[in-house]
Structure formats: structure tokens, C-alpha cells
Length: 511
Image 1 (tube, helix red, strand yellow):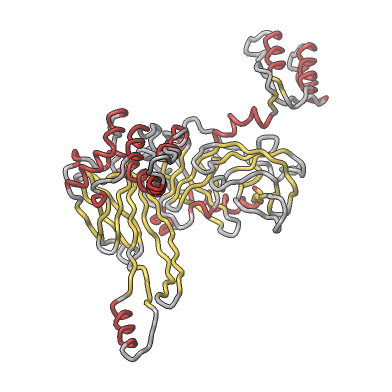
Image 2 (image 1 turned 90 degrees about the horizontal axis):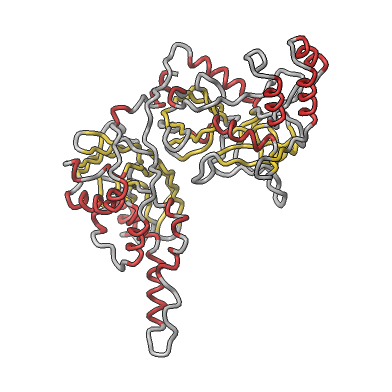
């Protein structure tokens, strides 16, 4: 600062207002003196080094280094999306390497990384270590210009990366939130894991654990490592345990170009209009519900809009209120003690749960095979009872939605594992499958598309689609449900799926 022409007074003022740490060892002070620093300036450094860790800001609040570091550290933390859910990850290299838990991505072919509300990129899986539950992804940092890679703790130094009793923090994406800070204390440092009382919720999995120096010393894994009855503590994989998978990831990068920096669709920030849901809450019937549900070969498909979702979830409440009102529907009885809209009080705090998106659910049908039913009927003719052997008829693999000739890129292509385990006198049902739950922009199905076509692929026939052309009545009903949102915020622009990058399945085949 002195060499750039700033006066000693300005440099001293900068030191006094800073909360950083300063090296005041004899060698460092001598080096400053030789560089031309005045004694008053050196004295300011010594006094700053003596300040307590906590600092008082202009509002009178006391903040420590972990708090003031949050704004810097959060620029390395991202949300990781896969077909089976989401978790947290962190950028740790300027080449675009991202670390997360292996269970966050699982067998998913779709993996994406989201930096903020608008910036979301395709991620390529480079290397995984299921035993340590670590995965390393590769993204193109040109798409995240504000990102700042986290510093991994030096594992080769004389000092430990973290010590027992040290304050630590993690930043993650729990539930429906993004970049939430949680602090704690290191309880014990084991050979492979760090035990801490820090709270790691679902969605925090794969996030960084930062020590008091702001260095990443571990990767958080959701789990309780206590015995029954003990307090809740969590285990974090030490950063030293990830060095092997990082090395393999760097090797996998050689000779390959970086992934695409094109942005992927994200969930809209604007809420669905409150009054539209309020009108649904007062409706006794939801006319035309059959337009949302139809069959596509061995799948049952449901188109879920915010009004339909809210009406279905509040149906029991309406029915219960109606029953109570009938019971007291006579002279002299107290009236109106329960209102259907009671649950709407404070609704603006929760309206984000009903995002202005279209969700398409593809649920595999279940039933008994022809030969199973034949054999059971044959046995019954001889007086032998056997339970019906119920199985899923297929397994969901993927879906495609076409608006006219354009394939619409989903905001999130989801797959939900479904397990069936029922055995009694009448049926025996022991099976597992995936059902599809894809999230699309509100304008994915409108009359402007002309023809709307849905293609569903099964695991048994991953290259052969079961196709359904949506009826004009269904298209009109979906557009009608989103009309209040379009009127207030306009129609969202659809992303053409031709911009879809290669899948991680292709990457794995190469590897």
C-alpha cells in the first residue's frame, strides 16, 4: 500500500478497521522495517494483533472471524442436483473441481451444480469413492464468475488441520434453503473422521467443514455417530481422506475439454399468486380433474399444477370442516368456529412451497401377470388358496416433453425410488421401482405449442418411447391454471433441450 503511494496515515487507518490477522514475529517486523515502514505503522500492526477475536461493528453487534468470513466462504459453496435429490458441494480448485458426497449423486445420469438463484450448470462426474462417500465433479467456472474456490487445509504441514475444541462452520443447502451457515465445535479428531456437535441436516450432505482459519478440513456427511440416548453429533470425512479421489479426478480431466458453461433452467423466484390458491381453497369441487390424469401404456401420468396440488392437499381439511358444520347446523348451535381459510393465515410465508412450475409424475402401474393369475385360478379350482402375486409392470427411466417440435428442457428431472413390501392372505407384493417426477417451466404446456407430446421410457426399453399426444382440453386446462401467474409475471422463456450437454452415463462409459 505504501509503495502504491498511499500515506502512512491511510495505511494505519486501514489496519485499525481491519479484522484480519497480522504476522508480528521478529522476522516479519524486521522485514517491514527494511521495506521502509515507519515505527508508528509497525506499532499499529502490533496493537491490531492484540485485539480480541470478536469485533464490534457500527451497529454494536459483536462478530468473530467465522462470521465475517461467511461472505467469502459462501462463494465456494454450491447446491448439487441429481435425479434422486439434492445436496451440497464446494468448489476447491480454479479449474472447476467440485467436491460432494457420493450418495448425493448416486447412479444419476443428470448432475447439475447451482451457484445462486439464476446460475446453474451441468456437472461432469470425474471420480467417486463410495467407501469414503466422496465424489469429485467438474464444472465450467466461466458460468460462475463470482465463485471463489475454497482453500483446502495443508495436510503436509507441521500443524494439524483442525484441533479438538476448535470452532468450525459449515455452509449447506438444507431443505428448501440455499447457503445456510451452521457453527459448532470439534469434539474429537479421529484418524479418518472429525466428530463435531455441528448440526448437519438433509441437504447439507457434501458441504465443506471450515476450521477457524477458513480452510476446508472435511466434507460433511449427514449421520448421527452417537449411540442410542446420546447427544446428537455428526461425522465429517477428513480432507486427508479425499486426496486419492481428487488425484483420480485430475487424471480424468487430462485431454478433455471443460463441460458446457450454458445455463440450465432454474426454479422461478416469483411466487404463485396467493389469491389464485385462495380461490381453490374455497372450491367444493375441482372440475375437470380427469384432464390431469391419463395412462401411457404401463404408466399412470399426472400433471400437477399449483392449484391442483393445493386443492388435493387441502381436500381432507375441507371435508372435515364440512362434517363439523353439518353437526352444528341447527338453531342455537355455535356457528363458524372453524373456517376453511384458517390455514391460510400467514400463507405468504409458505407460498413458496407451491412454486409456479408444472410437475409431471409418471407412476408405473402394478398388477398380477397373466400366468400368475392363471396359475392361481387353476389352484383355486382344486381348493388351494394362493395369494395374488403383485408386481410393478415396468420401471421408469426418463421422459421427454415436446412443445410442438421442440423438446422442453426440464428444470429438474427427478426419479423417486418406490418400495412395496406387503404380504397377507390375499396378496404378496415385494418389489421396487422408480417413478418419474419431472419439474418443468409454467409455459411448458400452452396452446401456443400447437401439439404437445409426452414420451416416457422404461428401463426395460430405454430406447423405445411410449408416446401420448395431449388433448386440447388438457392443454387448455393447464394453461388456465397458470393464467394468474402469466398475467402477473409474463410467460417464462423455454430452454431448448438441444442445449443439453452429454450425460454422465456417456462419461462413465468413456471412463
